[in-house]
Length: 54
Image 1 (spheres, one colour):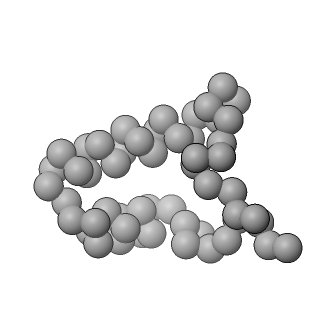
Image 2 (cartoon, rainbow, N blue to C red; image 1 turned 45 degrees about the vertical axis):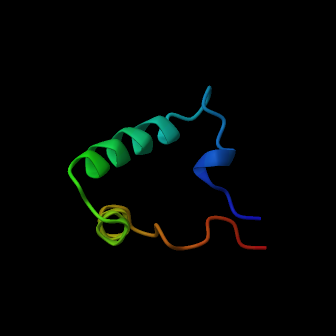
Image 3 (cartoon, rainbow, N blue to C red; image 1 turned 60 degrees about the vertical axis):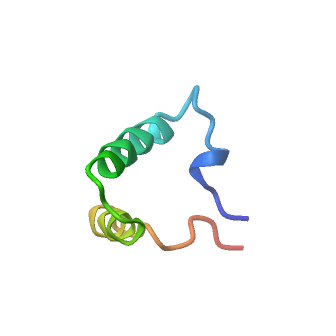
């Protein structure tokens, strides 16, 4: 099982709202999916690493 923003409780975790706002800005700026992925990868160390290893 891997934790995702979709599984995060929005009442106790503000991360989903912050990421949605950031994604909205990037999408409205006309960024491609690849550009958005690269931005997230570069701005968040460990972004592509599994959060929970079994």
